[in-house]
Length: 373
Image (spheres, rainbow, N blue to C red):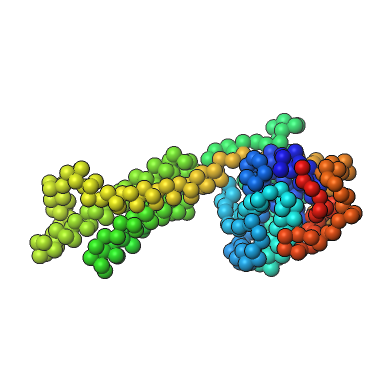
């Protein structure tokens, strides 16, 4: 699907499209759909819902529906607020319209069943009574049109950059150290019970370190987070090696010796090359776990560095009943003129999961049997 046709399709759904991100609302539920990738069969459609409360019941309910080519997970936006994310990866453009309709229907039903709702207060001023939508902090949020206008530096500007990356270096370092030492506990327990080292457990050390780094709101930087997790994991591995040597040394002596004495013996009898050779498989497992943890760190860093895309209130304003502003007639026609059939000659109830055609407030019908360009 070309970017031009994607924009026309989203506009026909009643969305405002900026930088490949479609902003809309379905029956009062704000959402955004971002197009990722280029070329047919190589594109992801990220459908995001910014909500308040525990998102796990809604996520689990959506996973049980098994909509084709779709997976659900919970993420956090740049403000660390929960976001329900659906990753839709259709094999071709033929599945896009029906798939997006199914997703909106299913998400609305699951979110209502879980008694979830979008944030009620404006993220810019913190007050209620919102009258607009805007893409802020990686999710579509209710806002005030006046707040949006005050944030726009120029009349034609649609976005402002994030002022700074979120998070703090000290809390991140402490979190990485805490997570690394917690990740070393399974290996320590295995040695106490089985009397031998299971090297594959070393992969848990950097993974736990990255998770706790994010939990403690460390600096949202790939370089700082990566170095913190790597150094903390190596330190935890070295500490674990010293504990194992202390246990073996105390067993050989027949009594518990001071840890300083065992460390002095370790450095006196073990060279750096020998230490690396003895721990080769453990270090390999540690590196595997570190590369796995980079996925966590990359997503965390990206959530703090994206730009706030602000839609001008004049183009994306809701009334007191919160309907989306209907798209222009020529915009809707441009999406349907590229097809072989008209919406009136098609069946509205044909979709991937036999669901009804979802119609956002103010959005026109979309033909199911159209042929995409």
